[in-house]
Amino acid sequence: MAVDLRRRALLLAGVGLCGRAALANPDSRAQAFYTGRDIFTLGVAAGDPSDDGFVIWTRLLPAALDDPPLPDASVEVEWEVAEDEKFVRVRRRGIAWAEPQWAHSVHVEVRGLTPDRWYWYRFRAAGVQSPMGRSRTFTAAPAAPDELRLALASCQHFEYGYYAAYREMAHDAPDLIVHLGDYIYEGNTPADRPALRRHCNPPPTTLAGYRERYACYKRDLQLQAAHAAAPWVAIWDDHEFMNDYAGDAPPPGMPGESYLRRRAAAYQAYWEHMPLRLSSRPDQSGVRLHRELRVGTLARLLMLDTRQYRALQPCIDPKKPGGRWTDCPERAAVERTMLGGDQERWLEDRLRAGGCKWNLLGQSVMMAGLVGQGPAGPVRWTDGWDGYPQARDQLLRTLAATQASNPVVFSGDIHAWFANDLRADPGTPVVAAELVTTSISSIGQAYDAIVAQLPHNPQVRYFESRKRGYTRCRVSGSALQADLVAVDDVRDPDSACRVIRRIEIEAGRPGIAAA
Ligand code: FE
Ligand code: CA
Image 1 (cartoon, protein in one colour):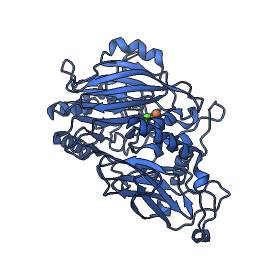
Image 2 (tube, rainbow, N blue to C red):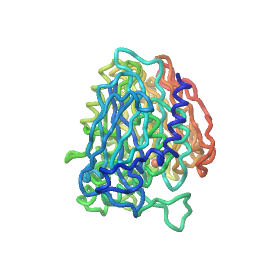
Image 3 (tube, rainbow, N blue to C red):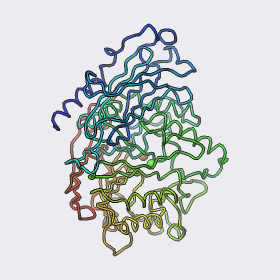
Image 4 (cartoon, protein in one colour):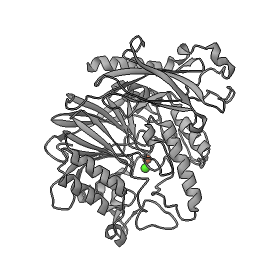
């Protein structure tokens, strides 16, 4: 079965990369408002699979500035979901409206499908056929699949590298791609500094600017191939809005009103460009991004939002707010929330629900502590959970108190692989394992400085920051194996990828079993 799926993914990646023109088929009914060449320039995507459906996504956007613009009106989009890639056995079809107030994006929540199988989907609008994508439903409880194949991704700075990792991921054809944040970067490399390729617009501050930034990323065909090959589940980190931001607190010098207006624009653009459910669409209360995916009784995946509700980082330097390598009494002394009370209660409730072999937590920033050596003594990175140690310890005590079965935390953000043991308090037993995945393309952390600190950080069982790539996980009833897939040369879009390490976690034995 695995071989068959890989073959199909290869075919699919081929469609994503070069098959589009052949699929276009102008339809005279649509000529009234649109006669452009292609309006599916950002590809297609599926997300948030359940045991009977998933979201399918696209956004209508003409190919080039000299193409006719879309009307400032809703556009009818036909969609269909089939059991085969030739769309002979269509299981669901319907009409959706691409509305201009949501950037002509389409989010269809497809339901009523058969559990535990793959499907193909596509759209048609203005006489143009979209490329097709592939998605799946999960096993329905109380059944459990033999295994779940995941790919973990984070941090894909467009200017620093190509997406060979996504080409490889599309070829893997995993059951689910888990994106842990920094899907876009809002900042630009200064023009006088080298970059492999350039963002296509100035640093965004408005809705139009953030939309254009997403379009810039999503035009990458290797990223499109990864979206077309498998369903995704995504949460954000900071760069989807602003470096190291914290909740609704503006950085010093920025009026609260303009900070919140800009945050709302960034949040809206995120929803518009991700295969998210309607329940995650922004409204006055914000964006509900924390959510649960269930894979029969094998696993639950709890996606956590570590940005929207967090308190300010501690030990702030007013001239340079955000995360720093520092320490001060405030860091550990003051209760500072990371998830916010509502999300914490939701998480505890989901952990108490039990019924799954694995409890997987997907979130952006590293949870394990990491002590470094500064000129004036020990320092911690305050933008990660080390800036919120009381909230972290409380979460880890909750994992222990709820006896959550086989907890594993997935993290991104720091452009390095870490495999960590997590303990609530020093001297207490390990309660969970943490896998931090490296960046797809963003520049890595200083390797030597962290290696020098590893003797003081026995909780870190593996560390590697010199390579870009992703993490390929196989979750079965007995173990979670994580293969670290490294890109040979991120400057080469055709670069080969290779597994540089296997990390093993055993069911019934908290923490990292082998690294
Ligand atoms: Fe990043
Ligand atoms: Ca980040």
